[in-house]
Image 1 (spheres, protein in one colour):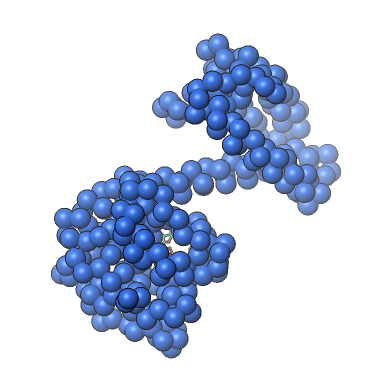
Image 2 (image 1 turned 120 degrees about the vertical axis):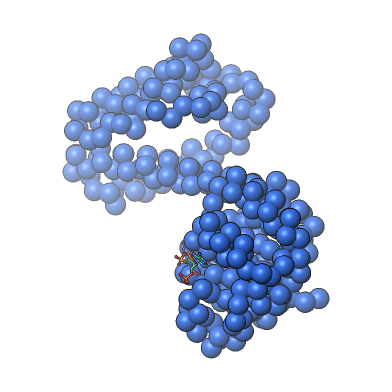
Length: 290
Ligand code: NDP
């Protein structure tokens, strides 16, 4: 089978993607709006296509990785090339709505289309640490899995083209929440002369412990039943009041502690005080953003 691949977009990420394909031995065609960014890849054995259309025609699989979806539409919309000869894998970051809309658009142009998301920095590309998510028709993913696997740990999430972007943003929500919680505690402890490096190993232990609760709590959410097996929400809420009090007394930012408590208080007011923490999914699951 033809394992050649095209990479369109040679920014920091695109160059890492093309480099990993070359390293894994795939004949690699590249194209970038600013041609000079291909120089090093060409020296390493890549073939530089003169136009984006030529690049699309060169391989059964094309990876596109540009700044945003608008750039993807500008480029592929302008290019005269039909998309029906290649499977297009769009690894540009965006929203699930953009992914689904681009899938419809690509479908009209005759493309097989997978939408993906990269949860890794460029130096990790080509190692197992690089998590790369894909969504769209499973058969199209399976047909190219061996080639796509050169980029990192690749996963197919489902036929809905929006899933990769949704998982990507869900992962970011997790990342920022963990980091913000850590920063809150660090700010508090620094007022007592404890430096960040001293607190970090303790914080890491807590974060790892809490992460271990997720599968069990997920079962409660999926079954819609939240018996207080280890702690009731109103017990948590009392400790949240301590977090606010400590933050205010120490003169550090109390916005996040107040937000956390406001959500728990609404849930308690709705009658969920005797249930367990994940009952808050009901607060997270409705629109509110003021
Ligand atoms: P860069 O800014 O380094 O590269 C952007 C690329 O997009 C360049 O190749 C640029 O071309 C091209 N581009 C932008 N607009 C157009 C256009 N209208 N027509 C043609 N080409 C265009 O960004 P990255 O490579 O870092 O990021 C690319 C994608 O990867 C983003 O969606 C990003 O969110 C995602 N990503 C990046 C990560 C990272 O750590 N860097 C991590 C995870 C995801 P030119 O060279 O001519 O300007």
